[in-house]
Image 1 (spheres, rainbow, N blue to C red):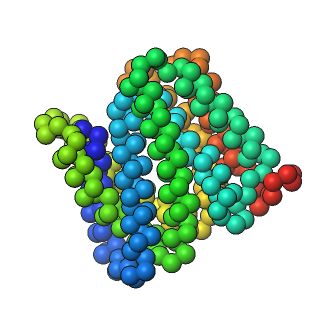
Image 2 (image 1 turned 90 degrees about the horizontal axis):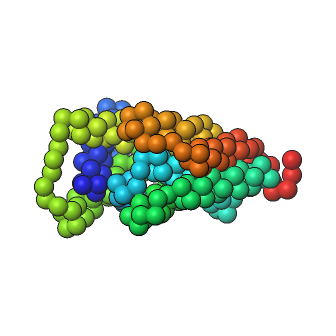
Length: 263
């Protein structure tokens, strides 16, 4: 079940991050004034991951990987609104339009199946919420360390995942060795190492420019979905991934110092 997967994945990630912090002598304690902002941060994280896992379950891996990775586009918009010095330029606007066109092709390609369309919408919502997390995290980094933010974000989220799974998901679990290995990889590598690395980078670089290479993710995702899962690649899907990838490249490669309207 998708929410249970999230719970186990991030429990493993939490252990990895906690051990890493202890090994480096890094404090995880928080000032009282930071608890409420982190609670909000953690709740957004719960909704975002829930949308990711449920959406991915309902749609194909091809569609999911494209729509989930629209987050750099939303980062550019939110950064323009809320982060000084990270403004939209003409190049970024062109990238936004291209990416929007790509997302449109993905939705046009989606079969007329209600569950799959809901899955696509959840994946797109997850991409937006991931952008909110990136921009919100930029504000939190002004008073907290990256390891504190990631540790407590996951610590807040894990109980919610298990509670929601207990309430809404079936009690039967079919956990094979391959599934267990996949969850271990997602927990230790993705939720552990990658989360900390991302937050460390976010502390030093503009939020919109950190996604400079993420234009390749939808491309790799579609190719791997075809190779591993045997999912078909259609013309509309190619146009969709091309639009999103090109849009992300334009948005992330633009000089964030360029104000709107200047070259």
